[in-house]
Image (cartoon, rainbow, N blue to C red; front, side):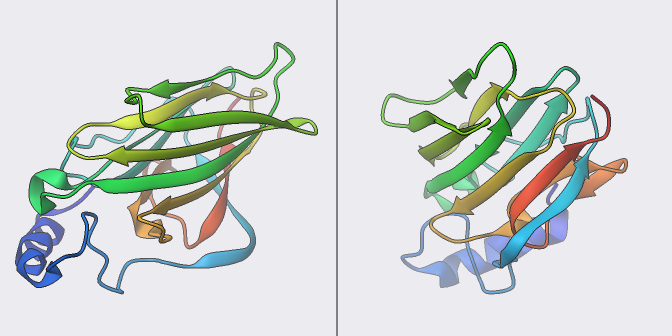
Length: 183
């Protein structure tokens, strides 16, 4: 979650941003791509509070039984601009088959689901402003999923939030394997 100092930094930086879109990127944000995926534990059943249109970023949640929810919001209430969220998610396909739904998406938002061997590949491309968009999907209970997430065409890893070991964690780079703490 963003602290007051980061919100203040956004307000100070906005006049300098000029024509830049929302989700201000000043070079200090994590923007690394990994040579191979890194793994992070996600606390089963935990979530991270955030405010739509203010706390920009991705927020992941895993619920027992293989149920995943990843949502995102922009900082439009601070920046007055929307963000383009794009990404790919790989999940092991459950025995019941793959299913995914776009969470609070608009007609122009895109979510595709493609079989890829024993996995399902989800690709999304949404423009998000003061609301929330996301994806709900099922994987094999307890199995990892792999995320490769961008905002405005840039890896902004410090804007990817995961409940891990009882606190909010961010990945060092993308892609990211999320390993549930319990099935």
